[in-house]
Each structure stands twice: as structure tokens, then as C-alpha cells.
Amino acid sequence: MMNAIPLTVLPLLAYNLIGYGLAGADPWVRELVIVPMPSGAGWSVRLGDVLVVFAMAILYVEVKRAARPSRGALVNRSLSIVVFIAYVVEFVAAEAAAHSVFFFLTAMSLFDVAVGAAIRRARQESQLELESRVDPSDDAPL
Image (cartoon, rainbow, N blue to C red):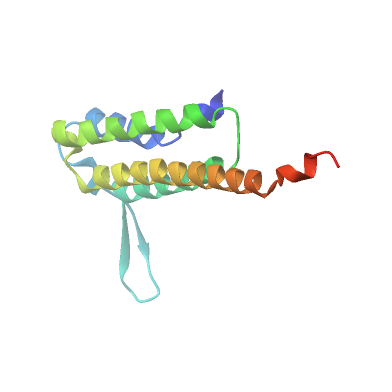
């Protein structure tokens, strides 16, 4: 059952908890740490960067899950579409979601839906190809 839940909902929840929970200034540009680089420059790691990398890792896991046939795959695909619609609705309707970080999360949710559909179609095509290779004359009596 847990396999049916799309993990792309986790970045959405994190964005909403942090974005709406921290009133005031834009939380996504808040510097978490400055990493000194060998060039002498400092790499500023922001909260939004961390959330996008987290979402990319989630997307990777979702693609791996989509490539594996399972009983909850159809439910996962359907719920992934629902999650994507939630991203889109929030992006266009909520002021706090009008941010590049949220746009990237929305795009990753779209990629999850697209990859799932492509994998499902590839499975169907390979199944049809296997079925077409079976020669019905092999079963005919001699």
C-alpha cells in the first residue's frame, strides 16, 4: 500500500509547512551555510536549494519505483496526477507558491507523471510485441 503513495507529495508538504509556517521574509533565500571553495569564493547554500535537491532525490526514487512493476503502480500513477494538479493549482492560486523553488517542484512532479506514463506505455508495447511473436499455427493440429 505504501508503494501506491507518490513520494512527490513530500516536497509539496515540506514547502507548505516551511513556506506558510515561517511568516515574514522569504524563507527560501535564507542562507543555511556558506561553504568555502578552493577558489576562495563562498558557496551559499540556501533553504530553497536544499528543498530542490531533496525533491530531485525523491524524483529519482519515484522513477526507480515506476520502472518496477507492482500491484500499486496504477494507483501510484493516478495519485501522481492528483499531486501534480495540486502543485499547479497552488502555483497559480497561492501567493506563497509564486516562487521559482515551487515552480521547480511543480516541474519535477510533471516529470514524475510523464515518466510514469512513458514506462507504462513501453510495458504495454513490449507486451503486445511479445504476444505478436507467438505464432498461432504452432497450436494447430497436424
